[in-house]
Image 1 (tube, rainbow, N blue to C red):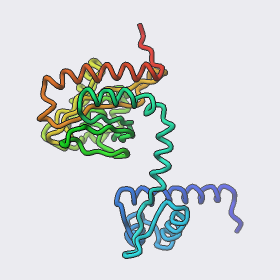
Image 2 (image 1 turned 135 degrees about the vertical axis):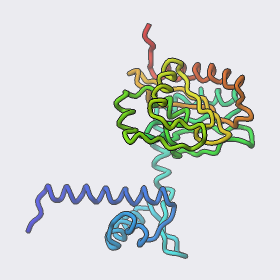
Image 3 (image 1 turned 30 degrees about the vertical axis):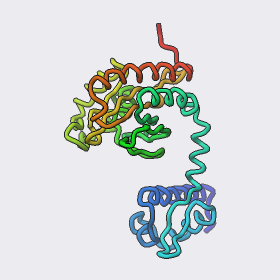
Image 4 (image 1 turned 180 degrees about the horizontal axis):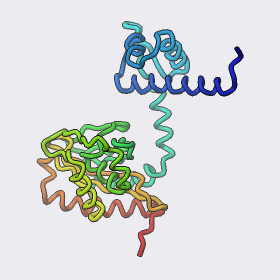
Length: 262
């Protein structure tokens, strides 16, 4: 029987989905063989091999000759780097974040919200040898990071309810907020103050101060933070950082076209 145009569209869509499932799996697991991939993704070995062969021929995947396992090449990184280069938020925020890094002598990060996680899209390392480990593309839970809370604070309440509908917020440290109502209360305070603080809520010994970034439509499109070890970010330093971060937030947002209502 001849396939209809709709059948071809469905098959094409499934191929795209399967391709990205493989890409995302390799991104999470670094290296994997055909058997492992096909079992974990619920695909046949022949299907997995076919998609891997195509990705390999296009330069997105490479094969380890020693164990025949597959891993992602740098091709995707090159593409993402080019895409980031066209991101107005990064371009506009960069000089202000560099100034903030110089003033604070701590690491500065820029992120966007992806459902219940944040993704780092830019970073400036601290001059200190003892500093926060991070890399562009890294993700972290939104509910217990300063940047995540700075983004969640400006989302509709229905968004928060749906995001954490199971009522469970994973605890990463003894300071992590694990109750949804307490999280909502914290987000209300962040909206009022304009800054968010991570008081060792995601990693023991790490503190962060963050603020949102708005665009010309007044929407919160990103957030940034100053991060450092708790032995340096004492309460007096946190107080100063809140002022610096708030000022940087206003300046970046203004350059992106945001105008506060009188």
